[in-house]
Image 1 (cartoon, rainbow, N blue to C red):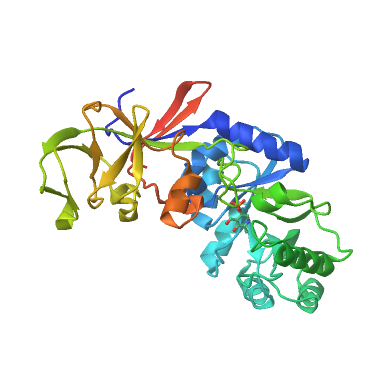
Image 2 (image 1 turned 135 degrees about the horizontal axis):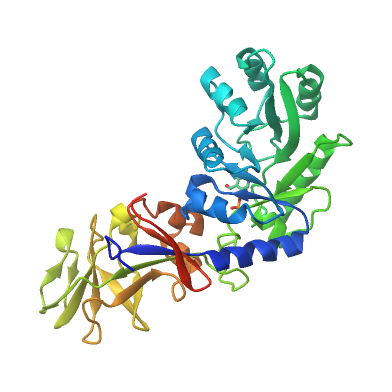
Amino acid sequence: MFLKRDTYALIDLDHLKYNVEKVHQQFKRPLMAVIKADAYGHGYKEVASFLKDFDYIEMFAVATLKEAIELRELGIKEGILILGAIPTSKEDIDLAIKYDISLSMVSLDYMHLLTHLIEPHHKLKIHIKLDTGMHRIGLTTKEQLHELLATINPDQFEIEGIFTHFATADCDDVAYQKQVDTFYDMVGDLKFKYIHCCNSAAMAYHEDTRSNLGRIGITMYGCDPAGKESDEFKQVMSLYTKVAMIKKIYPGEKVGYGLTYEARQEEYIATLPIGYADGFTRRNQGRYVWINGQRYQIVGRVCMDQMMVRVDDRVHVGDEVEIFGPHISLESMAKDLNTISYEIMCLVSNRVPRIYMQNGSIKKIVEFK
Ligand SMILES: Cc1ncc(COP(=O)(O)O)c(C=O)c1O
């Protein structure tokens, strides 16, 4: 394998398959694969191309119109819902209709705005978004929903679905249940092709019987929604680099910008070609990497393109370094950094090549996306 860099992310498609199948076996209903934010850093074109052959992947969810259009241009035929962004220009609405992309209908005002933007004889697909407690986007009352249904022009809009999003399916059962109750109270006996509310946490930790589509995100990528260390899912992304240089330093000598680390004895310092421009933030100073079966500490500040690790004489130039992967889970890293696995994956930057593995061999390499 020849790469133009020694730092790369491995994306294990077999793990992706394992995770999706596992969730589908439990949930037993079709899934909408959430592949926004470049599939949480995994590469949304590759992930969509892989998942489109799974017959229970009914739809894809993205965040922006650009992502949705690129999926269509890639040949994705499944439904595509834009979850978050709220396109407000006529050009955006024309494109959504042209590319058969479904938008989230987030308020009565938004419906009125779109009514004026849709060309005569054109029809926009929508999923009505209900705000059942998170207070991000969506209609907030049953009255608003009924007014929308009473006034929406069926010649302009095709209502494909209705949905909500949970704020605490991973951490607060009471607040979660309140949202569930609010959602089904608002939906009542109304009929929709798709009724969806479950994210990964809801599918993993709760029983829901009324929805007919699950929105799978973080568990598909192999992480626990609540950040627990668990082997229930298989982490899809691993990040590696290689030792570029090793030098010996002596007591009192210091390392990196600001000279924040001082050697107490004779020490070996390895330099690795990865830094915060790769998405490996400066907050990682003091954490660990994995080399030849051992943990070694990151010393000094993480630079833009490089960082230093205190090693010993068992480590050599060219040795492979695991930044996260089989020995350093994203959950443990998230805990160290006081964040969530989602953020760490999404931060892995575009200059890190992605190597797609399937059945133990390389399927595709995407360099410098
Ligand atoms: C509306 C919506 N649904 C589903 C998801 C997927 O969530 P998760 O990755 O926790 O499964 C997200 C993720 O942010 C979302 O915003």
